[in-house]
Image (tube, rainbow, N blue to C red):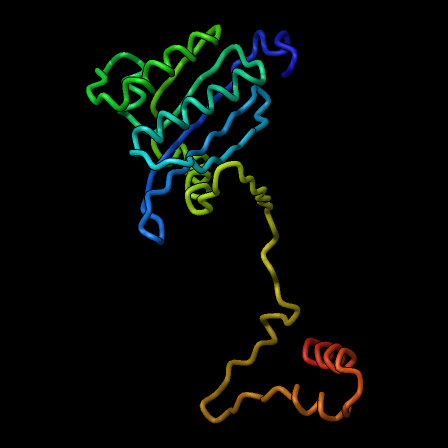
Length: 210
C-alpha cells in the first residue's frame, strides 16, 4: 500500500461499468471494468470476469465496489465515481429507493465502503463518456476467465501500414489485361530437392521483393 500522506489532497476519478450477456455456449457471463485516474491523468485500467452469473444491475454494483476497493487499497482519500447506470447512481445518491431485494446487500456495501473515504462523490455520465470502462467490460466478458486465472493484454497504438508500392504508380487493370501469376511453385522446383528451409526462404524473398 502506498503512503497515505501522498493522497491527502488528491482527488482521484473512478470510471466503472458492468454487464452480463449470453456466451457462445448459452451461459450467462459477466464482466466488469474499472478505470482509476490520478490527478496527473495516470490511468489504472482493470477488467474482471465474475465467476458467477448475475444481472446487469448486480454487475454494475460489483464494478463500483471493486473500483472503490482498489482505490482504498492504494490509499486514495478523495474519490469521484462515474458510471452510466442511472439506477445505480441514483440509488447510491439516495435519489432512488432500492426496491429489488437482490440489490440491497450491494447498496449497503457501497454505502459502507464510501465511508472509508474522506470525500466521496458519485455522478452519472453518458455511455460515450465511459467508453474505456465499457471496452474493458466487453474484453472481460469475452475472455470469461475461470476463477483464479489472469490474462495480461497489452494494447498499443500503431502507425497505419503503408505499402512500399506508391499509389501513384498503381495501374488500374483494363478489361483485356490478365493478372500476373505468382511464380512461387516454379521457383521452388528450380532449386531441386535441397534444403527445404533454404527453398522456402528463397521463395519468400523472391515473392516479397518489390
